[in-house]
Amino acid sequence: MTVDLDGVTIRTAGPADASRIAQVHVTSWQSAYADLLPAEYLAGLDPTERARRWESVLAAAGDAARVLLAEQEGRTLGFASFGPSSDEDAEPGTHELYAMYLEPAAWGRGVARELMRTVLGAIPAGTPMTLWVLEGNERAQHFYRRHGFHVDGVERIDEIGGVPLTELRFRRAAS
Image 1 (spheres, rainbow, N blue to C red):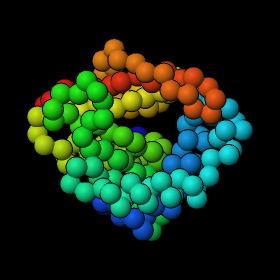
Image 2 (image 1 turned 180 degrees about the horizontal axis):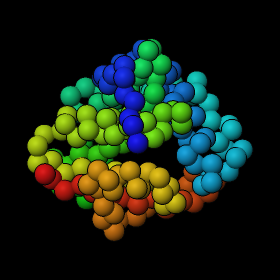
Image 3 (image 1 turned 180 degrees about the vertical axis):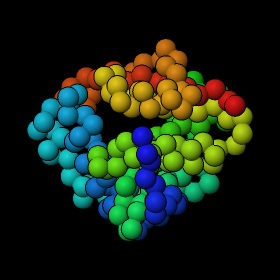
């Protein structure tokens, strides 16, 4: 497979990027979770509402939490958000990948791989990292396994769109 990453840049996102991030967030959910969540819930996702949430996140982001944006020729292809772990059982210094989503058209092009490499390069060496993945999201689970993450046995149930879903925690050991 040839990866075409010509012209893709990854940079730190700011509040002005909120609407573009929100649009990617919504379209990615609508494609990635089509078999996991009700169609009416996915159709009702509102990019404007998501943009307001992302404006708050981006305004508060600093040294502790960061949001990276992947773009090409002015078009947002994806984003990743990460920072200190929010897990109650996290050891001090553990980081968490809060979110990583791409436009479906960018899937399989190497953009997520470059985002992940950038995230991993931005955390201190020797830092463990966790993330949560919906059970049944095989594409994401495969991607994270390829990047050294493994299910650690911790699960949680979250209700999304009126459906109880199991989330699996993945962990990447300090390297």
